[in-house]
Image (cartoon, rainbow, N blue to C red; front, side, top):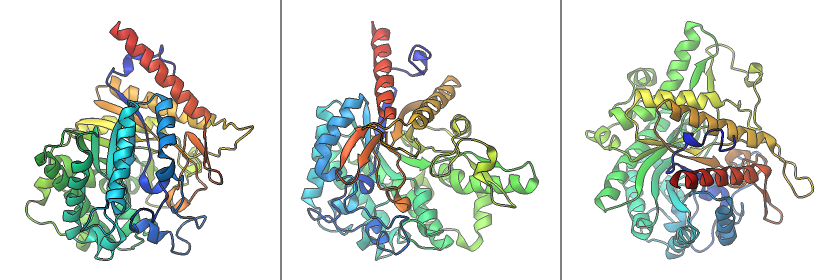
Length: 449
């Protein structure tokens, strides 16, 4: 994977980064006027989090951000993707803005810029203010307008200094896992609610993009989707039909409105009475042109109409999350999106793996994670060689953190966090990434010369 193998694959302006999210790293869950989010509430539900942990301390990034910014700069990345916590800047999701919360993100952005790192802001990485959930949350159309207010407030503070603003991270997760299966916050189990939530998320994305542009926002604007290729378990008609439907619910349900202004007909038919209420003009708003599309990719999905698919049957390596290591799926996904939709520049906004990371003599030899990153970076290069317009690649995650319903047991970081002491240690994967980026930078300079 060294640069002399394929320096030509990555253009000079290709953006290399790392990613985090507010609830997973910040801690300080009720400090300096921050209000509770749906995840603060969800963590209190017995059995909701595997290790019964929560986000009150996490990685203490709210207190240790200066040290973390130095660490980010040390990696030699171009961009840092982070999310703002809405209840940190507006405790109840409406009304007064919390100056101390806004000040924190201003210090973070200015600290990144001072270190030569481009700030990539995500507005909503799942931590909706609990006060809005009490009024129906994303199932309530009024939340769409509250989100637009939030987007404009963040723009007023930071819009002149962030390189990129993503409206939402993974609407499928918030809608389906949050409101249909209920395994993520807010823990609701209703397909009809989930679909209405998905529509309101998409509508608020389009409305926020329009409002930001009208406000003169210079940042690149887009959304981040979690996408996977969905392959039938066998060649049977039943498995192929299941794969088509699952693709409809995961990929086309979000891509079609964004780029075609419609929901997929086969999914609407399947949903029957659970289709969302859509008002006239909504679809035009959702398809507002974007500057970029963010894609979070971890593995493929396999659809089976009969017995549930056993991930270990394929014989492929799996991560601690029981996800197959399937880099070829990323190339296939990017090619398909490029062929099926008029996509703008695509960014891999998250990619990485949870592996067992024992620390030995102060070091973490995570060869499996390094190999995972190498294979997926190569998969991006393969897609680009076939004409796909890619803007950048970001590793999930900068450091070990609160892995949602899995708690702290699953580690995705390229930096190890000792949760007892908060000591950060660069794993071998971080050292590899640092070296790889140094080689990319050298290749850039050589091309200029």
